[in-house]
Image (tube, rainbow, N blue to C red; front, side, top):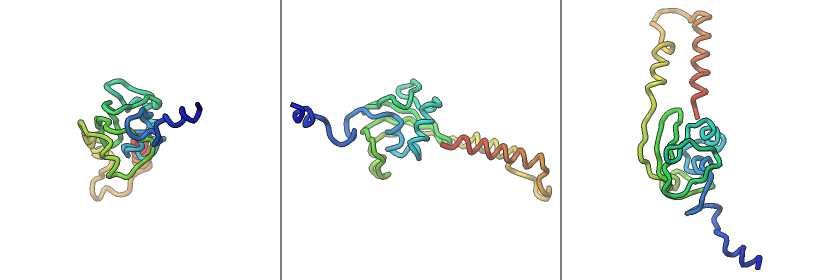
Length: 145
């Protein structure tokens, strides 16, 4: 009897039509560089499924619309196929459809205009300037993910 139960279980580790954790799927289709980054994005409220913020353990199925905000872009993607293991880029793009994708370049350029540029011939930055530059670098590094 146990052998019959084992034989009816789906194979493939969650690939295909099954339910998969949203953080694992985001990482597997290469929308986030690491599984940790995908998990932090979910926990931080930057990932939504069908319009509602979700926890990393929320399951996705084909047909769900996943909205993911990253440092460089915001996009809405429709799940075509679920994956649990990371695959190559050509395979990954077949697992989702892009509904909408926007590049978020304006906030970074607005910050760089205020402190990233100095007048030519202004000399070395003062100590106060260097501290502000360091704060700007730390702020921009935190937003990556």
